[in-house]
Image (tube, rainbow, N blue to C red):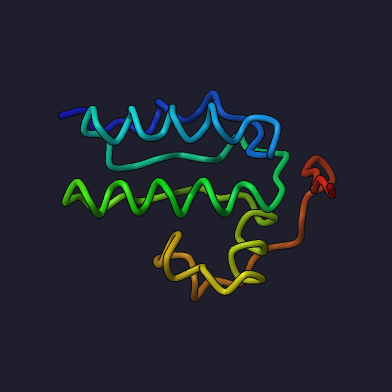
Length: 110
């Protein structure tokens, strides 16, 4: 089983513009046995990111595996806390305070 987090390193945005493609990419990775998604390169997010991450977690649970989302940017952590779903998306990060959003992070409003 592939457990490499590198599969998601190419993801730089998680917005309404690429939500469907990102969702499908993640679902395929879960089906292939990947259990860790590294989101360190995501710099643009909107509320669609939360929906996509919840769908990934739901698919992993249905497959009987634990999906770990690691290296979430501060803006993404903040969104999960704002929507009250941090424990569902990435439980290991819920107790950690989100750091200040870097100047390179971009929050899209629609």
